[in-house]
Amino acid sequence: MTSDVQPSVTEQSEAEALFRFQTGAPETVRTALGMSAARIGGGVVLSMRNDITHFWSKALGFGVSAPVTAELIGEVCGFYRAARTPQAVFQIAPDFLPEDWQETCVREGIVPDSSWVKLVCPTDEAVARADALDITPDRIRVAPVEAEQAPEWGTVMMRAFGMPVEQYAEMSAASATRPGWHPFAAWLDGELVGTGTLFVRGETAQLFAGAVLPHARGRGGQTALLAARARVAQKLGCRLLIAETGAETPGTHNSSLHNMLRLGFQVAYERRNWRWRLTPDER
Image 1 (cartoon, rainbow, N blue to C red):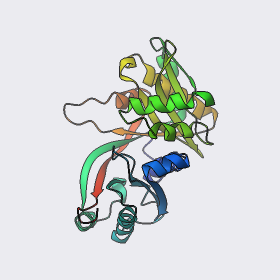
Image 2: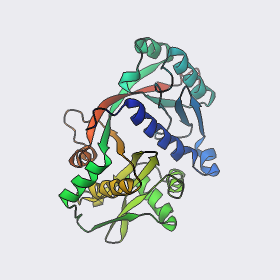
Image 3: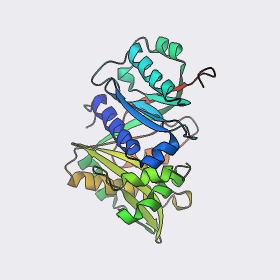
Image 4: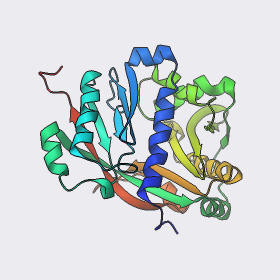
């Protein structure tokens, strides 16, 4: 069962993975994208000033070792102002939002945005489900990524998520050979078409960057990537798998969410994204 998994565990797992992913980028990439990072109030604050996607500047992992206060949020916003970050997203578990959160949002110019769901699954259960489903993707082969495949793997990851390749792919590729990361790829008839990686931290394994190129979807590749990572997590002694994906809204269907639910993942909670922007006068 997953009902006893605390938000402190799930939030820190994601925060540390994202922090390592971004800060491990080559210095040339960090300079080109205007990247900086800090640890503030027990959370991580990540800035990518030149990110045209507005996805990678995030503040998360708060509420675990210290409460979320107006002063803490003000300090984080101050970091973003100093870094000249055009906009950033706060990701805070609902259990950790303070009673005066709305007042803090008004003061700092923070507005609600899309929502994500946090998913958790005992590793053994995911492996057992994968074995029972006897996953056999259609012409898809899944295997660990070798060092020489990292550049192509990083490129496919960005393409699959609809993001730019230049610099971003190098950031992704750098994680493939760093300690704690376990990257996998999916090949369709010899073409690298899907990615997924795993960040291991103690007994938790954070699923990260699972995606398949549009022309290779619907063949079971993403489920196979999930199963492969669950199996390696089990071998490494990880007790719990943690993941995030976009929450479904009326009229939408998130295949990633349903693939994870098939393997035994449960939605631990839904988490709102909160977007902060520089004012015109601050730019």
